[in-house]
Image (cartoon, rainbow over all chains, first blue to last red; front, side, top):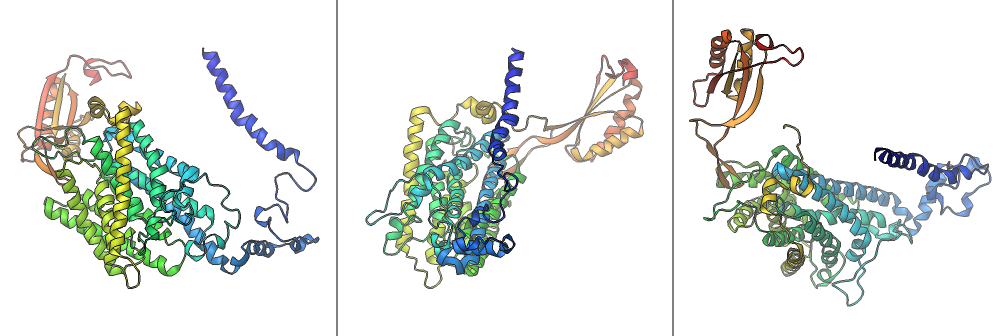
Length: 494
Length: 112
């Protein structure tokens, strides 16, 4: 037995470190054709960016080919957009950085959820979060992007299924022509920025269902949520669907509705089907506290989310246009700050002690509240929007507990309730000329929130009927780390 | 040989350790525990829900000493750990049948 295992190990190592690399390098080794060592870019043509260089560039005398010609080649590739190249490149750079910052929000979600739940479920939380970002990116490439932005034709407004992304650099996809000033990025930039958003909506659900959801049905649900529901519902607004075709279009700058309320209402639906944690609510309606096990992680999580939000809102300017960019960074910051203060003050008054987790939720509430309108409100309005969001979130948490709806991290209150607030605030606090209508805002939030809710009720409900969505009582008591993953987050004496 | 088990307030640990070192006792085992005696718990609030915390964090200190040193050691612990306020803790003394030093296989008083 032992010798067979050893043989398998040896052959595996051989394949990984000898055969495959050799196979990879062999073509280059064989391609030695006297024009220099294989694999080295030839001075004039090998670099891909130069591929479109016009024939006139290839001068017989190699000394004349210099870096300026490379740059001119880049400009030529931009066609009519060449004069805007610097702004285009800067905007694209900002876009991809913003995408990376939105990615960091997943780190924020992970640590926040871990901090506000019990240590016996930590591995499970982390696994769900890791899976969600992965499946979000994959489904967005496979079908999400082209469903989110399907290019509705005349008469279409609701649903058009998209295919896997192709070469988004092709056909001028890497030039100014892709989106002009309002979308100053390449096709791939557009894709990756939006892809990072997709999973943030879905991960909202993972916090609300924590500590008692069964892993497999949750993974199936979240795959469908981010792969189907998110792009379809999103297409109604950002994809130029119904909500943008209304006489007064819906306004949701960076996604208070299509990302946050979407996630919040999906979470609500799942929690209603799932039920509260065991022992959370007593017979007389008494609420039992189940404290989170790591406040430092929770605080780190919120601050990471705040940091990532600069990419979330800032990147939603969709260019490096300095005016809106500075405004959005300012309004975003002020709303978050105001949210912290008002949530802290309100919780201090209502609970007679200042609650850290509520203050942290307040920051997020302010951020969600400003997400719909960060580019059309003043600094002063941003503060008010954040203050009100902080108040709303505290009372929403209390109300949900009173109603017997168990949300360990406050996701439904932060994203659902404050998502609604953000959409309405876009109307109430818009600067002159922004064109936001109250009717459209109400219609939009009802459609988006309602659709997310109904989708989740149907899908999660079906999963409950097919395979059950909740772990057994013993598994819940033992902790999901042991029961679902067979491991512990903190195996040493801690 | 006797084992002295002392439940003390966590912030008193350094003082007790120093007091024992002064009388020549340098070895001990320390565990973080929770408990209560007559000191009642208190109420805490988490996200709007009140809950009582009955168990308070304490330190349990265990040392094994020669019969001759029990009095001295116990006194040292009590004096160092006392604050005069409720929740100071307790000291228990029990008999130890055998002690073995793992490295050298010494037994009895030499192992302590």
